Image (tube, rainbow over all chains, first blue to last red; front, side, top):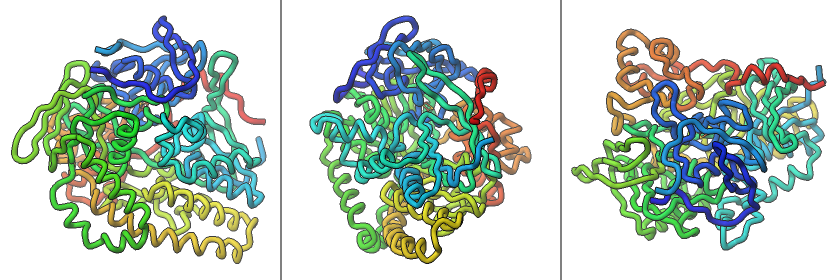
Length: 98
Length: 474
Ligand code: FES
C-alpha cells in the first residue's frame, strides 16, 4: 500500500539520506521528505528497541530524531531541508512503497 | 549584556503575530521568537507558500487560512525583531531568554545559543493534540491527525490509496477529511471514538452557540455533512482500539456495535482535540488550573490573558483552547495591556480598544462551550490496557503507573521517580497529560491537588557542542 503521495508542486531540493540522493521539496521538513520517500521510522527507541513513530510532526514527541548534517538527536520535523543536506537515519523501517 | 527589549513574544502563530505586530505598532521594541522556519504557527503553517499556491493544488488548503494574509503582511512590514528557527530552552523569572538559533550557513545549517532579556513577555506557544494512548499507538504509521495535516501543508503529502483510517473526534479531524477530499484523497474508514449520548448532552447549548459564533457553527455543520458524503465507512461508539503490526502498522482491531472488528490499515490518524502547550508557563512557575470539562491544565489568566505573573501574558490556545479566530483577538488584547503596563499606552486608550475585543470574545466563547461538551475527551479507560505505554519515550505502561500509585506515589513527580515516566527526550509533553488523568482516576484526588510534572530547563535537549559554540548577543 502506498504510504503518502505528493500533491501540489514546489521547487526541488536535493538531500543525501543514508548516502543516497533524495529529491525533496523546498520549504518542507526533513521529516516529510523522509515520509514521502517511504521511511516509516527514522530510528529505534533506545529504551524499548522498537521503531520510533513520527507522531506529531510539530516538535513535541521526539519520534523523528535522526542525525542531520552531523548533528545527532536532531528533530527532523523542525528542520527544513536544504540543498546538499546530509541526513542519517538509524535502522530504517519499511523503506520504499511496499 | 544587551538592554532588555520592551516585549518578547514566543510563538509566531495567529496569537503571537497579532501580539508582536500590535505591540510594535504602539512603539514597543519587540523580539519575536519562533521555532518554525516560517511564520503562521500550526494553523497557518507555511502561510506564505500556501496562500501563494495554485488554487487547483495545495491552494485548496488556503480556505482555512482566514486572516493569515493580513497577519503575515503586518509582520513583514513591521520593524520588530523576528527570529524564526529559534527554539527557546530557558526563560528565567526575571525574563531572560535563552534559545537555540538555527540558521542557514552556506550549504549547511548552524546552531548557536543566543540570549536576550525582556521587560514583559507574551507566551503564544499554542496547543498540541491531546495524547490518546491505546495499544500499539507507538507503532510507525500511527500519527496525530494534526501531524497528517502538517504533512499536507508542509510537504503536500496526502495519504495514498486505501490505507488511511481516522480515529477520534473533533473539528480538526473533520477539516482534515475535507482537505484531503479536495485533493483527491479519502479515508477508508472513520472510527468515532466519542461515547454515545454526547450530542444529546451538548444539544441544549446549541442555540447559544449559533448566536455566539454562527460562522464557526455553520462551518462545523458543513464539515459534518462532508464527512457523511465522504464515502468513508463510519463506525460509532468505538472502544478497545488497538493498532497491530510487526515493525509498523498493519491492521486495527476495535469494538463497535457490540462486535469486534478488524481492518487492514497502514496509516492511522488519531485525534481527540487539542490542549494548551504549557512547557514555558510551567517552567516560569505560573499558576495553572485543571479544566474538568477539557481534562487539561490551563494557565490561570485574567480576561486579557495576564497570568499570575504581572509581566507575563498568555495569548491564544496556550492559555486555553479557543481556536485561531480568537487567538488573533487574544494576541491583540494582550499586547494592548502589555503596552499599558509598560506605560506606553494610556489606560483610557487601551481600555477603549480592549472593551469591544472582550465582548466579541465572550460571545464567541459560547460556541466553544458547546464544542467542549460535544467533543469532551475520550475516556482513557475505553482503550487502555495494562501494557499500553503511557510514556512513548520510556515505554512506561499503565500497569507500571498504577503500581507506583498503589505503592504511594500520589502525584506525577513521584510516579516519574518510581517509573521513569516523563524522563525521556519529550520531557513529559506526551505522557504528562495522560499521567495526570490516570492518577486522578486511581487516587480520586482532583488534579489541582496532585499537580503536574515539574518542568526544568533546558526545555529541549541541548548538545554540549552548542554550549561550546555559544555566542551570547552583545
Ligand atoms: S515528529 Fe514529533 S517531534 Fe518530530
